[in-house]
Length: 622
Image (cartoon, rainbow, N blue to C red; front, side):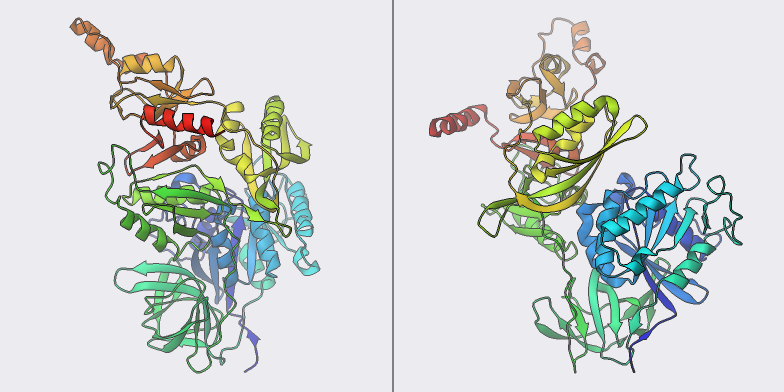
């Protein structure tokens, strides 16, 4: 049978910048398609099932669901909006035939929108532009649609791709319009507009094509995601490009290296709502799940035993940042974590490679250290936080960029496109900060009391930039980054200009000792916090490090003195450091100690005398 289009299926991905409402829109689509029972209690942002996603308000893992509208099954993939999770984006876009590009009715297309849209256009996907949050008083639909069209042209969209339909939505209320609603338009609204999401559903069916399939060809399925079930084992998820797959069918598993292994499927599933439905047969064009292959990995092909043919493997951009993970060597090791040995750490990191296709792990210089490379700082921070919550304790070093050699042997480093939105009063401070980090301004636009700047900055210049920028602008700056590529080295970049306050001895921090330390800088810990020698307890006001005795107590003479001694209210507020803050703060000679209960910073060499000997030997060698 020749290749034909399946009219009863649409495979789409929803792509957008962080916090533009794509997960909220999916919620509304599922509700209006009656995926949930009328009396079913459904939490908000139902697709953000990961705790970290809910806390940070971003989508980290791509997830798929399905609904049925007018007899057509619509498979929906909710994709991450942050460039650091581009590995998720690149592999799931292989499963779909079109995209919904969601843009904010005020902000318009943003940097992360560029990244995901560029990938979709390169694959030839057509897009429906959805202007969300149209109910906001400051909405500017004309500006947003014009800016979106300019973005399509800038990214090299074809004539067909640039003639995209536009739908205006209020995802929270589940309403959509084909024309801008009042007061943004004086045109008579079209029939059915502003009631529900019917205009959006109708546009999906009329504009986006169904998958092209050959149902009688030998089966071919590309594995793009993995899941796990305690009873069924490893579950492989992907799109079936040709043929059919049946329960208990014999297949060939083709690895990314081309090796072939005989296997047998156990069960096959399709998606409906948020559930997997077990069926006897799945047909080409659908996004399906299979079990029975315990050794399956992402990027592999499930093929016919008689005529095995591999599909093109998933291409993912190389990592740009790496960190050293190691066994925790602090005096508190083993007190707060369940898993802390090198064997457990190695096992967990290498298991992560099965699903995290953009990650790289290799053995470090010693048996208890590992080099983990990712697409950006946030990519690695999410892995660290996930492992911490699973009960692992370990230590990580300062992030560093990954260099490459150019065609003529020159050293190349990764650069980022940085977009900064800052109040005019802090413009000078931000430009000075980016200038010292070898940033090159590409564009500047003045708005209402705000300035939007576009810089090209070396990735190493952005390590630790976020916290410094928030401090310099009193928390008012908004930054977004996009990987620009590898370019020649930009020169020296000044590192952190303040030193650390370091605990002098083991003990318990008390108010008297902390007050003396506070006079020298900014504190990170409170009274009654256990400390050890070499632990970082604050930021020094000067460039050099300073040892402080936070466990020092005042000579006690009577009961009243004892009461004052432990009165923590007499200390000024401390700076509470999150995991992200700690990783941005540390220098090359410092580490972050990560446990399920605490995140601490420390010197690599804990003893003061040992640190001074190393420093003296370095100066002597110079």
